[in-house]
Length: 398
Image (cartoon, rainbow, N blue to C red; front, side, top):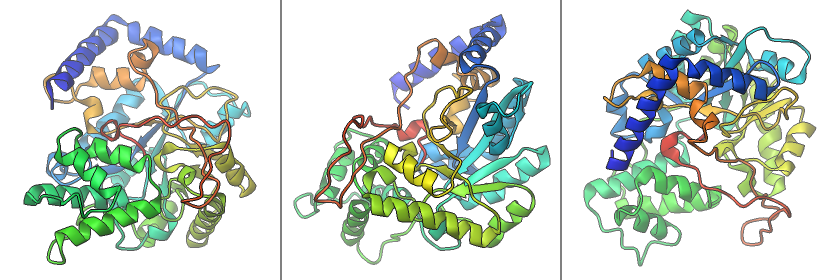
């Protein structure tokens, strides 16, 4: 970690200790409760729950990872902080005013359907009696596919590890631009990928993957071993135990990057596939990257969805829009104190959003311009906000 990161972690840990032990944390939580219009509805998001965080860290995107031990401690910390675990439907009923909550609610969510969730999160959830919903990229479940972000991380890391000069003059743009950012040291790999995926369509990501695979050659391991996804039998096992599933497009597509005919297909067919496999209705959706537009929301509503989650780390308010639900995206270092170990005071202060309440961080908004035509002819929807970059090392919703 760089020196700025060390200093930032030290400041947050010290502040968390003061807030927690002085009782100010509870006062800030009460203020947040008032802002929310009643009881708080906290939605937390995870990606991969792994057995060995530091071992996996050597080959995977850091912001996607949390150890099983830390995950368990998060759930214990949430319970100790006064949250009652709820299903998405229960939380939506409270938001709409259809029912009243006597405790603050927490909804646990997982994006992407990684097999790690089945292996390491599911047993903990079942043991502790905590409900959860997992959002699935429907066409990829039960396949050997790896996500584009995992493939790009693996390929660029392989180029770095082999000491190759990327031959920028023969690499097509934007692959050359990505490699310049990383190989020059201007950006860490995770941050460079985050910005790259935030700009380019799925088709461009695939072109970049092919260019890097050609550079490495056929003898290199081109597909990462890690990052495998659940199969449908595993999904059905969790479903039989009462765990819920929502849609996350067919192929993990950032919908604001795509024309509306693609948006319609990704939304409609992902819902249909999961319903066919599970024999249950699918009514909840997660935006890839957390990005959405009014056009995407309209498509979701027409196709029978009742909610959609973003990665906007803000309060969910009573009476708020169920298609722009706010989530706190968590990973291992969310809870690491100044000494490098788990900090319960830091964790609970972060979960209670003390630092946001005090203005120590700015949430990244998920509303983006909508591409209305095919790539090369695209126009952006009028009135859309200019995109802001997200930081993958802080845990974006890939």
